[in-house]
Length: 398
Picture: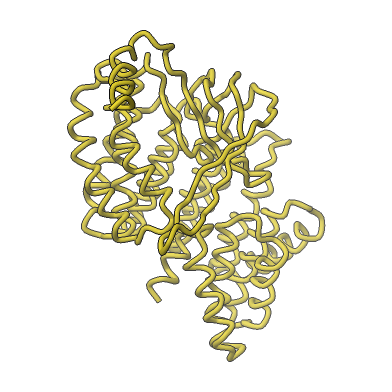
């Protein structure tokens, strides 16, 4: 009884307590470590979340057995950081607003649907179908909360993004949610262009459009992302490359080449992206119908591999050569190109997945090694690192 009375008193006095500050949880790409910054002073933009100060902690998850079940606990320990850095949108894991940003409702109501989802995501023992049920149960909570929040407010943007994210997760598992998720992400991208969520929202929209076979939609979505004011240069160039990549997939090599040459002309001479654009141009040439251009592009790719030390760029170049050799029916040469990516240049998860997807077929069809083929298939489809990627989805459908 005393605990209940104390809880009631705290709720009544909540207005007198210090206002809650923003918390940010992000993934450090160098260490692979999850970091939480509490009471963070931040600035938002399409380039990401700039953290100016706060209290930083390393996050660790520990799973223990409790009887017949498993429980995952979230532990933190202090970490020293040099503040003033920007977290790219793709690395943001969680973002909890301060009370001043949630005018129109109380903090517990704001966190209601989010807490429900967080609890399900943290429960590693939960069956996937049960987790999806929690997502479905959270949708009415979002629908009830959104009208209470002022339009164009930071809080409404946050909640509409979280709802769209839940729909995207549902659509990734059950196609019947694809239309709702697509509509929600398209509406979000139209209504909210200034915050950090615009890049992941448009990226998810492109992924859904790809699943639905809407190739033209994918291209336009990436072009839309590239035009967002304030977007980081890395994201802008990557978006234009993905738009060109969509043209390459549909064998519109001339159109892709034109887009890439236009991008190349706009890049400064010392841009770190020039070599990546060159690899994409080489991909247009080696996969196109001009044999002389293809041979010249092959030489350029080999020269780049011999001179550079960028492992991500090398993965892209080796995969491009692998695709070229497969086109020429030189499967043995293709096999070694993809294997180099898997064993030596596997930092980029997309390029790693691309190589593994091709190795599944090559081990089975060329090397006649069904066990290795099955092993690669299991790695690609079961490892969370590759979840949701284009080649993971393609391998799952095989």
